[in-house]
Length: 224
Image (tube, rainbow, N blue to C red; front, side, top):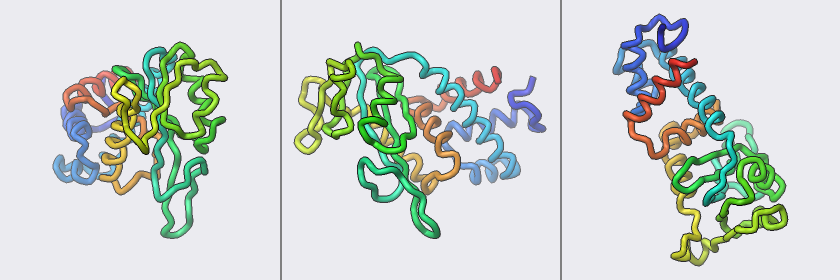
């Protein structure tokens, strides 16, 4: 059975494309290096990202119960915290708030949100994080009231003074993920189309070796 249904490429060539995808070589360069039509590469890359997306959704169904960090990030131009992102006409820029949850020594989870209000953040937290977890955030008012909904072990860091109190109260893990994600997406000059796929791809890529990604993606494609 072919790794990719209805593909005219051999599995050997598909694995070559996979290797370039895992090495984060863009579609244009991959097409040039492998002498494969650019549209074919685009189609394969999208199929890879869709398989990754489905896998991430499946992986993150269980509630997080350990030490968990919260933070939001904004993708696009200058933004105002708490305000929904917009898309402007012409040469305007696109921006969107994303909420991130990182379980220390575990998985990172991201979700597109309409804004970073208390209501929007709590909806995601209540869905993904157990009240038994120890949770860390910065001082943003959107995190006010977590104790009132059962999160009695909520610790906050004042980033204007320090990034850690030396006792484990920090959100360095999720901030490291945001740094990785923004740096990676900047190579593509920002991503407007299929942003959700690219976001889950960043979750999946974070802290993985190329070989680990390759083996995982081969497995995901075989079960499609």
